[in-house]
Length: 410
Image (cartoon, rainbow, N blue to C red; front, side, top):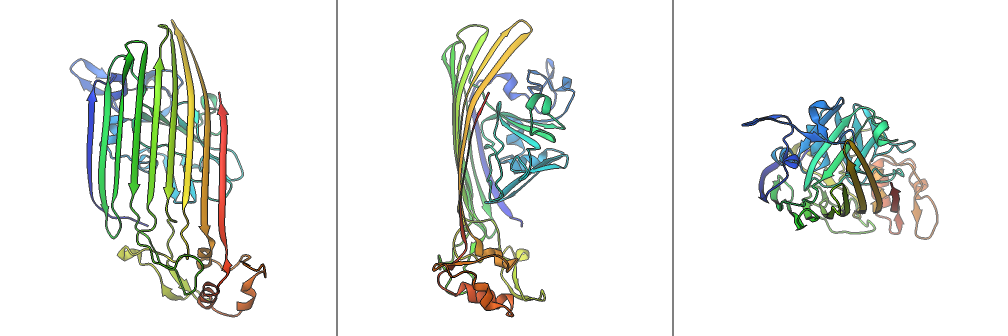
């Protein structure tokens, strides 16, 4: 499906001084003093991008804003070799160089793409039902590194195809800095979208203690109307315009403490919640047993999308990441320790009757436990069965899934 965006208005702002490393361009840029290089940590140490012997794409903060990258899906479009397909409320499929997985892992196997927020892996385990989206927001990031090819040596299991690293802005011990972003967009035959975000950081005690805090909110307007199909559908009877809207709110706080010249300690906390109000699926048409179209529900050619489910299918995903990073360096030797705890909780509700648009198989239950009502409709057309079941009070096939994940990483 496609959405036609008519207008996007963006306002960006930055204040104070920012470390040169954090504002490095995506590719070497000529300056009055020569060539400025991109500094990355793809090999677990800081070095120039031109010296990294790997296939690597880097997007710094300026590149992300300039190219209008607001989500991981936008990022995939700009990074060669990366494909990300999100089916709202269901799965996030990621692949690098054609080696794919489901939401960071395969349903029956290990991950093939590593997803890192700073130094913590945040890929999630799929249970086959709506594993949701664990990817962080594209806001107040120092850079995003996309590593193509096997990364098991440095990033462990689950990175056969590659790894994507979202690296947040670090607190500064010397310079104050800020970042602001506001955006509004309008969708043809849909609802408006908008976002607000702000970040601020700087020294608390010069050369000893610094901080960085950020907050971000984004509303994605819906464009699929939910109009219950048939009469007597259990659940909502009211048509809902632009039902598949979503809201995302996130915040991060970090401190940088340097008790000695050689030691740095960085505790941080990242919180995120996404709420999808309804499924991103729409119904095309109703077919008879021979495959002929009996009724057209949606018309994508005219940007008309309709979901015929009787009840909304919301999905709420909450996650928290707490981490403490220790860095000790002397001469050519650097030791890094990162201890983190990641927790995610998702609640997904599905009105599974929509599956009848694709199949009439499966076990249906009634409120009195009488069993499968489909046996009463054998020999009838798909449309007749659909209308009969949807008009029968008491029949349902709703699914409520609670999926939680917690992991310590050192």
